[in-house]
Length: 394
Image (cartoon, rainbow, N blue to C red; front, side):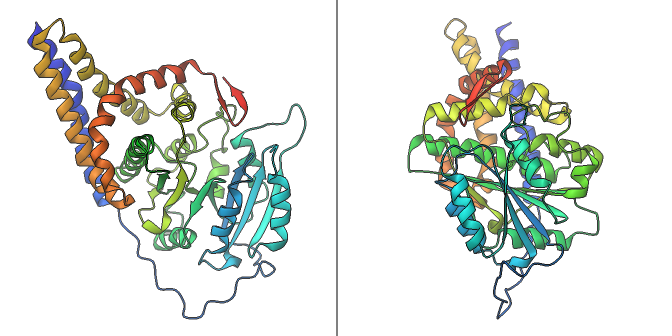
């Protein structure tokens, strides 16, 4: 009987390991676009000289981001894509700090076309990130929309990397592009562990796209064709949910336009954002993310979430139970070892791409902490109810 349970404890990590092997292969097959050399004498950027239709509309939702927006605006001003090929639209979501004043001043000094949209101040008006992005989208003129967050940093070739990927695609071939995101922060244990976990999510999302089964992406770095967004009615069906402005759209576009999703695997496309500074902040963020799981109608995402949870819980449960049933210990230990080996095998090239290969040394510690962490966050997300940016949800 105990040997049967031991084999069962090993079954879920074995299934998980097989999935990680497939995802690593898919990650390795992702093409890396080559950025062409810059012109010898680029034309000077000018916010007053814009074509009738720019190529990209960059949308940013901002709420109380006065401390972060100057850095993002400076990064956008340094883009090596000509300023007449993109516009920036920032939606101020009822900020209570100096965000509004900062943006008003930035309009006069920006070297690119900058618009500021302020959400209505009425009781029945929509609030939240989706409402802010939707308000900004009403002013977008470009065929392609690129989204990032107000607390992010982007490199000078961020938009140019998107342009290169789209130039290489055939007409109408691509409708959605997911980009890489890196968590940054101080040299502290919490930052390393949360960054490692997040890198796994980025790599899994990218590999899923490469394998033709997109499951996840991140709203801090993505792009979509504006006409495709309209064709699937945008956020309709999940607009009431405070999270999921990224993944629900990914799933809808994949269903409507199979084969049209891409991942932009290029270092120039990397977006950096600060990780949560405290454990409490990290848990609030992860609970917010987990709150959308119960609304998934996408079978591959559901199956992956269940597999990850069981692969973590089964061997840990076996270790606990081995105090009463010592015969379970070999199966539980083997399951843990198999799960850890699969994670390291998958994460090694992902972390290499992100320039954080040293985070791999924290994988054993994350393995031990992940089972109770994932269970508690998952249950809290299913229950709903959390606070984010001064608002209570759920």
